[in-house]
Length: 173
View 1 (cartoon, rainbow, N blue to C red):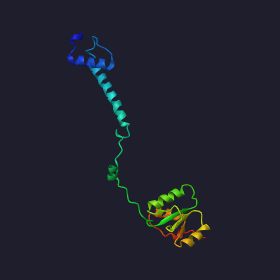
View 2: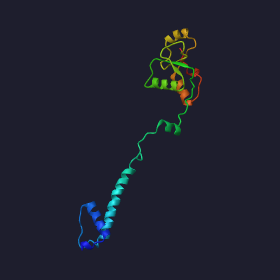
View 3: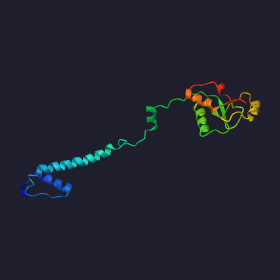
């Protein structure tokens, strides 16, 4: 009878009813107690498994916090850039194909060179991809220390990671 059900069995039925909404108590219910226990436990494990599988799919391991600047510096300090072009002043003359102007600016600044916006007495190197121009003669008259070089000189310094002589990369009339 239903009143003869032990406390543990009653608890199982109560959990089953709460979990499934089904009331399966009948005369055979005491015989099915082990089966019910297994079904309830397997449902719990399945539900827990679904939760853990969601956690496993998280590529960030549950954390999306960014490292602070201090943490990043501790782990990987930023290396010093070489100063191959320190004390040298550059002027970029003419047009350059594609992103070449941007790349040249980037390398010159990275290697501690100075970019001049206008031709001035400070300029030592005029970088051009257009070859010799008539105005270069006038510039030489004003500043005899000018050197006209191809962009390949800057690229070669970057590739070899050392200062190279500019003479092989000189633009001549």
